[in-house]
Length: 424
Image 1 (spheres, rainbow, N blue to C red):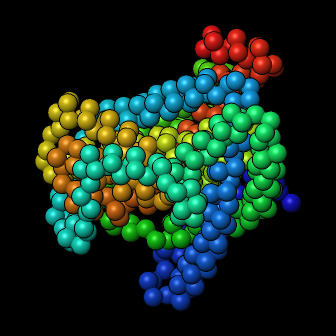
Image 2 (cartoon, rainbow, N blue to C red):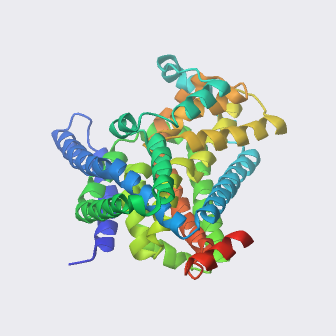
Image 3 (spheres, one colour):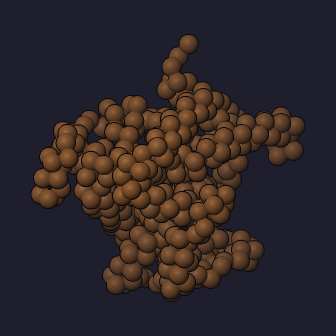
């Protein structure tokens, strides 16, 4: 029987093939309806199981990760390297998008009238920049039980960080509590292993529904923009991120892709970096050999804050909409798009099509009509697949970069670590 990696690859290929065949059936075909219903059911169960363990996994991994890093006096360095990496990769992603959009000018040959019905039916929620900041920071600090129950990932991350630091500050008094969290994390990872046995079936079902549900005629009218976003996103994922990985760690891109294959395919199929997080953690620790303390800190944080693919897409989409409505954005306005897309992608939840929520903010930042977001809705689900895969890839590359700088050899003793931190 082939291994899990091969099973997932086979399932992905079969899902695309079956989805294409089913998509060619008449809309009222009983075969089409039956296959789509079955794929929707199986796909929903798989994603639901991942979401079931998502919040407890995030909470326990960050608490344990922070506690372990603090215990080795490494948390300061990890914070600096992690945030620096996030800012650099997000900036590079948006630069790629803005340069490509200025060269190829997608959307300049299309007519907005093609999408008049969609724009009339779509009601965009108005969200100004000050309101976005107010909403973003207000959601950072919530009742932890409400955040856990409601799945407010960013609030869970913040509370888990506070608890991890408090456990270390309390020293031996809280050692037993830390041991409980460590055992709980082991329990969650065991459950991830069980769920992963169902991954080939879940990915098969998700890809059938995704491929069969696309409107080819509508996609053709926006082919230029679709191709541009795919090309720039893949360039970032195939050239930029592997280049950073190789230059910092010396690791081969092929070695990385082999080790991260399960997570990248799952991210592509689910379009959710948050739902993929259990598998991302598993790949980073087991296949890429990232220390658990680093992976448990960087990856959950990255699933919330580091979204290279989303930032790239939002920057390109803003220029695309500007071309559609006949507005040429100045360099200053494009810089506003740059920084607004960075902030918006940082605050976007790791769920399918979350970029649509924050896209309104990016459009309004430069005076573009928020209602124009309806133009992007028909193709968003398709584009969401590849940008989510790049989001997850960026997080995994980041965990390797941070692991390198956090110092596998430097975490040997308290005194040595202190010396290293002072140098950092």
